[in-house]
Length: 394
Ligand code: PLP
Ligand code: TYF
Image 1 (cartoon, protein in one colour):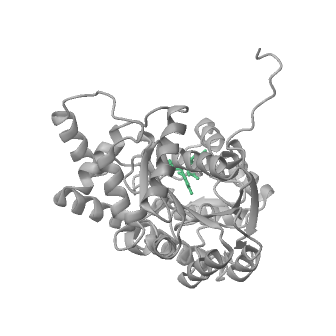
Image 2 (tube, rainbow, N blue to C red; image 1 turned 90 degrees about the horizontal axis):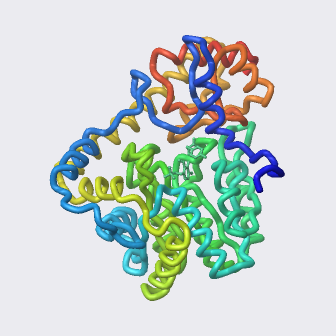
């Protein structure tokens, strides 16, 4: 049965990690996959997470099944954390999912069930898995203009102009903050304008929030989502705990449905539980149990907030340092955009040929399209990145 199978499309980011591992050069540099690294180049377990995991190991008295929606305490804490202060909290319902990836799939399947003819609109460019996941749900995917390669910022006018064509059969997928891959985020005025358009035209926003806390701070990074949630009857939210809790491999996230009424949201939740049952049945518990323990314990929560804030501040310092070193090495301001971007990534506009040259000749690995994981840099490797970029004519 397998003999006639064609070769599957590879994940462009995960295959980069494989190529990097196979590179024997000592001074190679991996700026591909989106993981945070400390100044030693290590992706650490956060102290608050370690403490919670130890307590859990000590006190958890059963590994019995939990349920289709996962840990309901986690679900409540996550929705309160995200939607506190908005009218949407009381008309929301949440399931725990295996990462935001699981949330994207559950919400995509829910859209396909509720509105089989829906089109999901994604930014050009967007997270590598947005299109494949939505298409796997049987949904049509179209793109709206987003990144301006000249300014390296969002072309908000072009984006909003394009969104004028959306109607009740459309779902608008937005990055809550720290846009992947570009690093360029929309302004609060644009979030406001999107809420106006959604109100007038009836499309449903779907916010993917994978980097809350890595942009400016936890509240600022959720401000766009909260604005939409407050004003609109229906919003979908995929949340990840992979980055801001450093729980990548534990596969921890949530899918939140905001409805016109709580009953609507609960119908959405019920169907996601049905879909989860036919997919993986129940999400893994460990990461969600850790997050719940952190969010409901004041001391642990403060420790987590401090650690997260330190990661955010370090990324911003790396961005400033990149700008300074690029300025002096290139005698120009053309790399100043690094400081305008937020979160882990920046799209640099390197051509496919330059990206290829960068890995082959310089041992520096960046994602196709020129995405650099700034959060994967360490202070003492910035010089290497700068000279490699200039060597390939960036
Ligand atoms: N959404 C975006 C925008 C991402 O960048 C990622 C990457 O990690 C995900 C979703 C998936 O996250 P998770 O690891 O929680 O599945
Ligand atoms: O964009 C990234 O690097 C992260 C991690 O199939 C990732 O979101 C990369 C590829 C993938 C899943 C996650």
